Structure formats: structure tokens, C-alpha cells
Image (cartoon, rainbow, N blue to C red):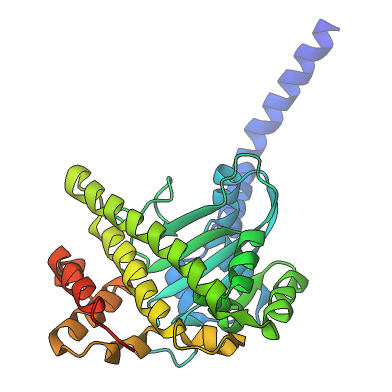
Length: 304
């Protein structure tokens, strides 16, 4: 038996020696066949009808890898592109936004992750990041709850987003369940009160981490944008009727509508700069923490 095993090993070794070039060629072909295409070129194409293009985008964004490392308990997902890059006539083609709605029931209650860019192994933006890409990972059911509660971001994704990968039925259900839903003003204001409280804590945390640990300033800008914009949205909600439909909620996601809320032209320009910094159309150095404080002081006196 031992002699047979030795002869088998020798035979395999001879075969490898004779076919080493073929093995290398096969490996090279396999590498290039499975290698994700350049993300920047893929995104510029925006070929939504091509299933191969959608699969290439999924691979380039490394969705499956992130799901496996961070959210292994989820069984499936929907990949949705939303925001200005969905529109072929977009004025901001470099600003790409994706959301991954995860299907499953996590044991550790980990239901959210924001990944700016695709280069960092730990899903945290670094100075090496060359892609203007935002990917948000969200639990499907928590996203659905926020949408039916009347949150503008979630409803905007549902109305204006485009499903790239995943079961069409799950995405269509989101559309159907929110399209004719009546939203209650008082209930939504209470949800915004909770949301604003959390966002203020996040802003304070991000600023502290930036000052103490030199974490990236972009995260302070993002936290400031969400907190300030939520305050402005809440003021507009107060003027709504007692109940309203989805279109009113989606309008709140269009931040340009808030520019004219500011009577002071200087403060208005600071808020516009904040929005442009969030979209990375301007440098993070174009806005300061003092600017954020000035905007917040102005909001205290705003009446829409």
C-alpha cells in the first residue's frame, strides 16, 4: 500500500512538471475572469439594464465580502443605488450612493454600518480612498419601519432608488406598502425628536474623536449635516396637515428647499457649503466647526 501511494505521488509530480505552464495559464485566466472591473469606469457607465454590469458593480463594491465579515448572520441582501448618480443627467456624477438592505435576523443586534469608499479593509474611510462612494448597510426590517414612520431618507430611497441586485419582490413590497400609506404628523415629530437627540450625540462624539484622536473631519461634517438638516426638516413637518402622503415626506429629502429658510445670506452660504462638503464637491477645509455652530444658532430663530 505504501509503495502504491509513493508511485501515485511521483506520478502526480511528473504531471505537474509537464503541465506547469498550463496550470499558470489557467490561474492567470481565472484571475482576470474573476477580477472586479475598475469601479470608476463601471459607475460612469450606469448601464442599469445590463445584468453583467450589475454583477460587476456588486463585485467591485465588495458587498459579499463585507457581508461575510461584518454581517454573516444575514442570508441575503438587496443592493440599491440612489441619489444623484441614478439620474443620467446628474450634475454630480461623481457622488455615488448605495444602500444594502440585509435580509435575516442577527443575534448580536448589529444592524447598521456606513462605509465611505471601498479600499479600507475595516470599512472605514482612509486617505487612500480614491472613490467618491458611500455604502450604507441596513437591516431590511428596521429600514421598513423607518420608512412607514415617515423618515425622508428611507422614503426617498424607495421612490427614487434603483434595485441593482436582489429579489425584485422585496423592493416592490417597500414601494407598495409606503405608496398609499398615511403618515401622522404628531407621530413623525416624536420620531424626529428621538432622531435629533441621537444625531446630536453623534455629532458631539465625532467632534471629540476628531479633536482627541485626529479622526477624519469628514465624519464630523456628515454628523453635522444630518443633525442640522433634521432640525430644518422638523420645522417644516410642523406646518404639515395632520395626515399626509409619501410625496410630502420625499420632498423633505431635497435639501435645496432649506436654503431659503436662512434669512442671513452668510449663514445660508455656510449651510450650502456644508451640503457640498458632504457630497465631496468641496474640501472639508472649506468649513469649520465655528461655521456649524453659527448655522445652529441661526436655526434657533428660524420660522418656516
